[in-house]
Length: 311
Image 1 (cartoon, rainbow, N blue to C red):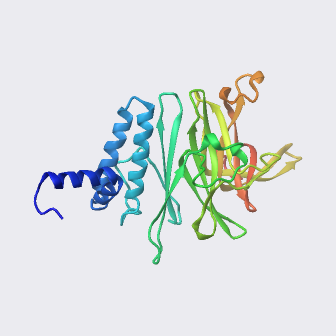
Image 2 (cartoon, one colour):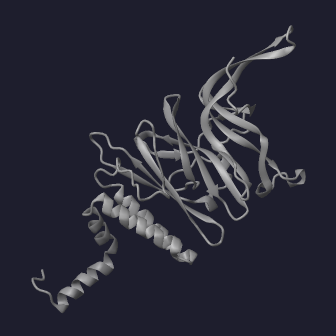
């Protein structure tokens, strides 16, 4: 090998850098502490935001995703909070089985490109496993009824991960998310993440009862990009029975506290715009919900989201 600096040595090093830039970058990154890598990620994201062209934004977006992937295989990364990356959604499952990172890059065309990474927590015998999520919305027909893999992901930024549920021995996790479709339409969604044997990951599951004639695998709320829709997970007072009181001439309701998904009901701004979701808006005075009972999310119409006093 070269023992002194010479033109030949410079040529060799340059040749290696050209042929194997990713390898050299990964080696350099793995030698850095997580804090230093995080600073590089923060600076790269600032560069993406400052870039005018969509093509360059997408190129830098791939570079950013690769750099974050490499950071998440470093020792100690599962516990690292990444405080310098506030624009990333970072959700940890309550059982600490995995973390999921999602983010988007707005494009000047009005579209968004979505990125995601799942980091599985190792047990005593396994090493960290990192799974990239590939946004393939253009190749997904009828996403409301599809079960998808990480390689064919319905991209979104997830902002809530609901404690896991179990159906027939299979554990799954429910996610609430946002997806900016274009300049006219935005979506909120309820998706499901499930683990198959050998930690294979799937998105979407038929656990939504009584919502539609054909059970969906995820719920999509499409609406105008000019309005904001509420979709949240919270404790509510749920009516479990009602009985007519002849003396008082009114129904007496019996409620119980339960955690549920609560959403605005969406309606077209004009009845003639039925089915044109870019014109859908929240009704304003009507909320619906999903309550997990008997192995599925049960759809409940017209809930009282004011948390009335339990009688």
